[in-house]
Length: 361
Ligand SMILES: [Zn+2]
Ligand SMILES: [Zn+2]
Image 1 (cartoon, rainbow, N blue to C red):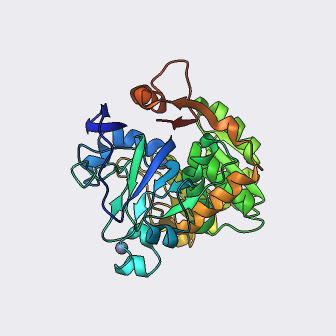
Image 2 (cartoon, protein in one colour):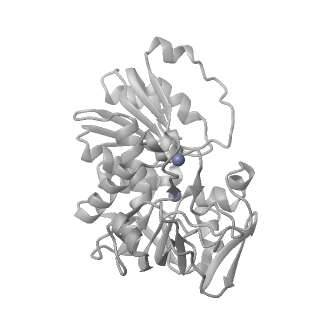
């Protein structure tokens, strides 16, 4: 079988290895496709290893969908799936017994095992989606995916799950709300869909001049207004669109830039909620005045990962066919093209723009 192994920063090798010997309780999945997002780029550049969340060598790929090829009877019974079923695989594998798991917050499990982060020296080593086969532990969380949807749509369970988790659940979005979504990437687009499903009235989305195509797509997905940040002041525009009140909810999905955090504080209405979900390379924020949170009675929170409930909503809505998701799919690559895929994701390929990439081994 073929597997992509990241052996160092920005170095992925395609290896040909024998089929793995599984433990009696392990599950084998034949990978059909694996989505890519900004986290893949961070991982490729070594930031996940530098943060102590992973080590080399490991098999990357955290948004996999595949067919179950082998599953022990007791695990099949627990998961409610069988051989041949098509499943989306959650990245976090809960231990099931720590206080966070028992409290229902298994994304925050104290004994974290994360697919795409575990080293190949552990067990079969096949813990990532950039491979022909992936091995699952019996305490994994998987979701059945209808055979009727394309693999490119199916792997969107991950960024769209984030939309439901961050822009709906964490933000507390409800009927009639105005939501400001900072960033029109896949998770921004997923946030638009979640807010529309939740009954938000006004959905305002920001992007840079380079994001023109994504901002067009944002409107097709349900954004009522878009803002190009180099051309229009985000806060002034949000105030103009909300009669001077500001947005009920603000969700920051942008990476690296800290200006959106400052904009969020200014553009949120008094008593509003801000959700920070995009990582900023551990930067401090110049100009951040915490007093503004006090005077505006704001709720500010971070959001890590996605819960089982939110992934389920994403798969349900993807399967509904209500949104023109196919317009997101700009590229489908083989494992051998992973280097090119990462260059595209980082915007380093002149004349070529990626919105969503699927890797099919
Ligand atoms: Zn991702
Ligand atoms: Zn746990």
